[in-house]
Length: 347
Image 1 (cartoon, helix red, strand yellow):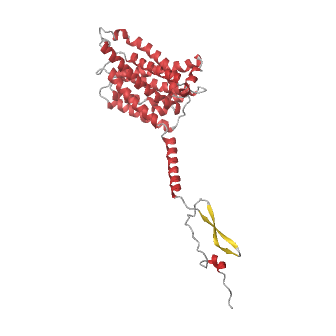
Image 2 (cartoon, rainbow, N blue to C red):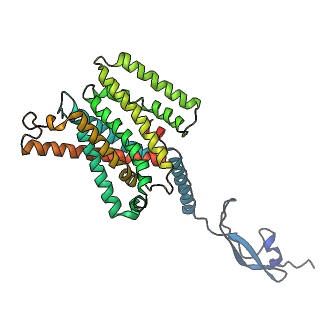
Image 3 (cartoon, rainbow, N blue to C red):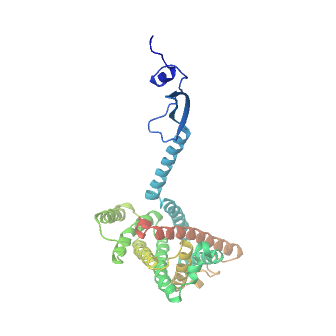
């Protein structure tokens, strides 16, 4: 007699007798949890168990891919674009304020006779706004840190920064009376040169070939513009604007230096504005009164700006509009200074 064949013993031999096994496809690199499956076939009386992979969720793989892409772009933004919103805000409001100043103070435009006095009122608007906001929302806008400052600490930061800022803005607005906006913009583009010089003096930056190249290119462009770029050249306007560029370099380097020495530091742009704008206002107000003599320039008998209620209201609204633009620009300036450096702001 031939040997008896046991169907159960041939079940695992590949294609024998018994219940068929159903396999699910699973990629080799899958990390899904395996599932133990019992079959009706046994070997030597023991139940045969196979470890089969659970079903693959392609949606999970798609979600992981999207998450990796989102993480990449988030890191890219943090490394390369973190200052972009503040730069865009500063550029927009700086351009608007320069145009506003040219229209308001230019000799062929509105020609307001007291640019320094009006600009000091812009600082007063910034001071009132920052003071009120930091007082009402102290935890959010750092009002408690400003109140905890001693008078000595407050004055050591506010006075030097305020005086240099007043000179920068005052000279800039006076130059706009004599030169056009394109030449003004080109001359003010030399500010990074002076920012670098003062940053090296204050030991905030070290000399490198990269920085030297930037300074050289800006200086060369400045020379070409002044020599060939503008036929309507005014020597006094040029000197005023160049003086403003020097003061601007000193201004932002000094602000950065003073803010980095604070311990604990100020929490943002609003408390910084509250600390610096009082001395800016008083410094520029004193310079404006001494230079412009507003009691003569704005006399209703000789000037139309306050000749009646209508002209007076128009002049006040024009000043408040400039104060709003200046406040927005200074806010973004302080954001850049606190988060980066004066060189990043100026370049």
